[in-house]
Length: 132
Image (cartoon, one colour):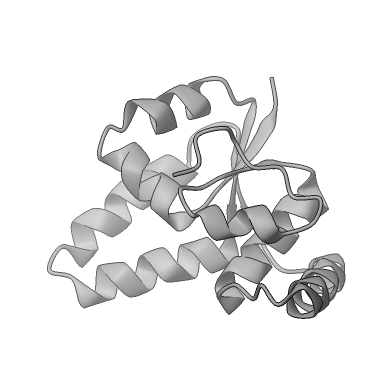
């Protein structure tokens, strides 16, 4: 059907069994995860008490057919620059990691699956219809 890119909170809600996140992933042909989301998840795992178990679950998820981790490229950096400047000019900055995540979504043409409403300020970014 379509490509989606998971934000950190969408992956967490998917694992928690959130029906909206589950349904969205069930209809996706491809699921992308930004290396920046991966970094946020690993940081959370290291700060918690279940690092080994959380990493195993993540590894199983990433090994599924149609799931891909996106590394940063020069094109990603170009999108990052466009987004960061546009948001600054609009007076609507968002967290730096989220600028990178949005850059990956624009680069791939994927729909960003997130529960963070601040992504709506990113010009041209397509987010799923379950924000909030």
